[in-house]
Length: 112
Image 1 (cartoon, helix red, strand yellow):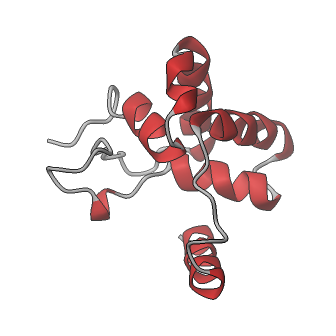
Image 2 (tube, rainbow, N blue to C red; image 1 turned 90 degrees about the vertical axis):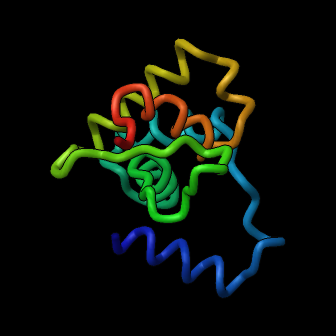
């Protein structure tokens, strides 16, 4: 939760024009690095942000799949699932990180 707050603060400080939307390929790189380094630094924050989605802002008409994670699901496990999904479905690497992670995770963690 603290890491998500940091991203929100950065967004408010620098605005939309400075922060680019990462792709699935960017997410793959960030999560592969994070799994080796323990989710530290900006790559770690990026991986955690996208592999632990909050269903708070995704309505029925959203392009982003609604993902509902069970309590206590480990970030490392989710990161591995996303990395494996991005490797096995390379077409997702061209989509935004949010959509690509959502499409992978929704298969295992759909909302009722």
